[in-house]
Length: 117
Length: 114
Image 1 (cartoon, rainbow over the protein chains, first blue to last red):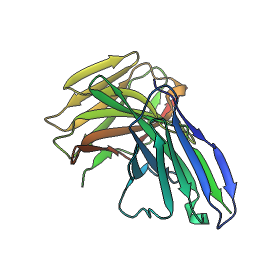
Image 2: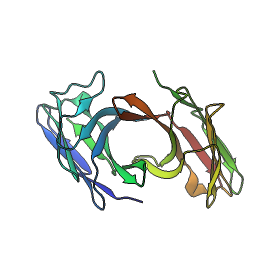
Image 3: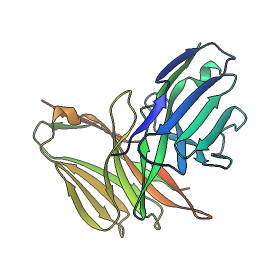
Image 4: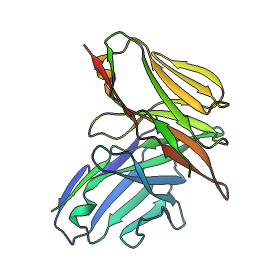
């Protein structure tokens, strides 16, 4: 399968600071990447769709000024949680779409566990 | 509102048995269907994709799709304790303007008892 990496895997920060999470597709180019959030014992919740070279599309209820997404290249998307608060503590997971023939499939990164003190 | 429904479980099966995981979806124009496995504290891992009606086999896994009934299932033969995880059903459907969305079910927790 395709390889998607995330960095960092775990981060602990103080309330009010900003945290940047990187998502990279290592062996393929991804025109579309997705950012998800998962709280304990809950399902994945899509936050935004990130397209290379254009603005991200945010899901309803997700603050675009708080969760800044930049898709700088076909292999890199970043999510910045600005002015993080304890309620932002969660498991953030990115995925990248790989096109094989006429089919595309989402592959997930290993996730970033954010803890805001 | 596109919905993907799964029984949350837990589904407990003895080692060596067949585990059967089910999923229904609401959007009739859904095109592609995926099963992901998620271990506790880890991110989802793709295990099967299926696009047309019928069965698709890959090792111990068989995905079954019935678009008329809007139903997709995953069978795991010779279940092993290492199969214990949450299985997420995901359905891809058009969102408009050439885009699509992947909607996830809440997942079924499988426990394989040694």
